[in-house]
Length: 262
Image 1 (cartoon, rainbow, N blue to C red):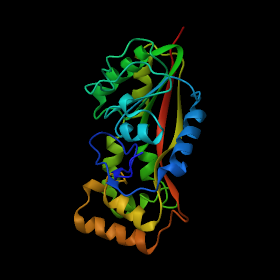
Image 2: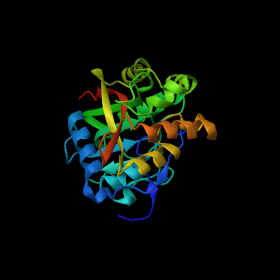
Image 3: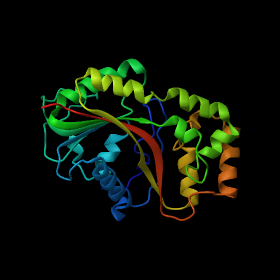
Image 4: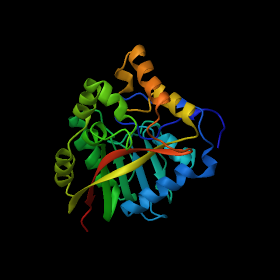
């Protein structure tokens, strides 16, 4: 793994959300890798399953999960047994991969507007084998915005600037839309769960503050420079969470699961 600076976040939200870069805790320590393995196992994905993950930030996820870089594009990563090469033009709604290529497909906020959800879901359903599962995930804006800073430190920003929280809530697609598109794609049964996804590993408070400055918190790009400075000063003065480092930042997501009949 390269020691050069890379994208510090994994799944910061819709593609329009700013990603952030900067120095990272050495991921060879396995903190984030182990967190993701636990998350995938909790969803029911077998360790050796052929798995496709789509959404913003997955190229970095591929590196952190140990996938060959050749199996990743800017928006897709293939894990497990090789299911075919991913071309640079591949996107979540048009992968150009063969039908029934994967045991599991996860599409995580792989759209910017409601009209794009359906094509992504239909492509995921096409790619999964009969009996396989598709998970469609969306950042849980209401849960994030209305959490306490001790649960999600970004709540500091939403309390100080409620208009930013309102924008985050408005940008989140409702679970009902995701479930409806799953049903339309022929998936049965369809269920929904709330889950905390690991986002980043932070080595110390200065690194945490720098990651926020560079875009780790959803909505931070909506602040003026003066507003951001004020939020960061509050975080530095009273770091309500995390309380110890290294710290794994999490984000609340809604995960809708569908099973391919057969």
